Amino acid sequence: MVIKVDNLTGVEITRLIGEHLQGMEQHSPPESIHALNLDGLKEPDITFWSVWKDGQLMGCGALKELDSQHGEIKSMRTSSVHLRKGVARRMLQHIMEEAKRRGYRRISLETGSMEAFEPARRLYESFGFQIGQPFGDYKEDPNSVFMTKVL
Image 1: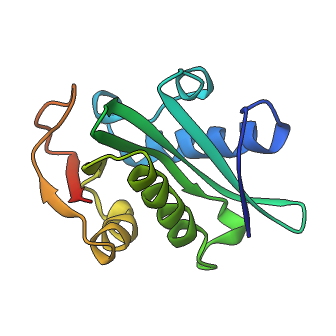
Image 2 (image 1 turned 180 degrees about the vertical axis):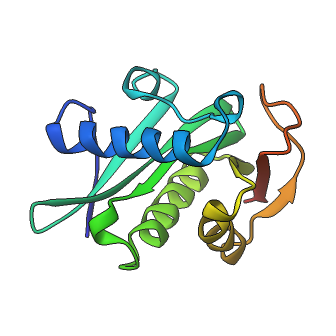
């Protein structure tokens, strides 16, 4: 797998972000969807990566700088045709390595509380993330799970 910074202009990544947003709409009420669209992912405080193998887009993920010591994981998504191949695990490792390289002391994320998000929560827990309180601009929400890891 090759992970590269992505400028979010390719057809494949546009499709994958669309799939990601559609999945969020399917499993979350509108007021609890915190996924970013393409324009949101192009903000200067966000670094976005795509995962490729043999010319195929396998997944993506992003890291948003909340402040000089705290980052947020955004838009982790594996293409539906590449599930259970270790894509999300590899992307999460990459994001965490980058967070450490930047000198962040902690990294956080928001994910859904519904059953559809259980695999994601298990992945984050396997990397040492713990359930915590809302961070940044998030508010308490029964449809959200907030997780943090001290680096």
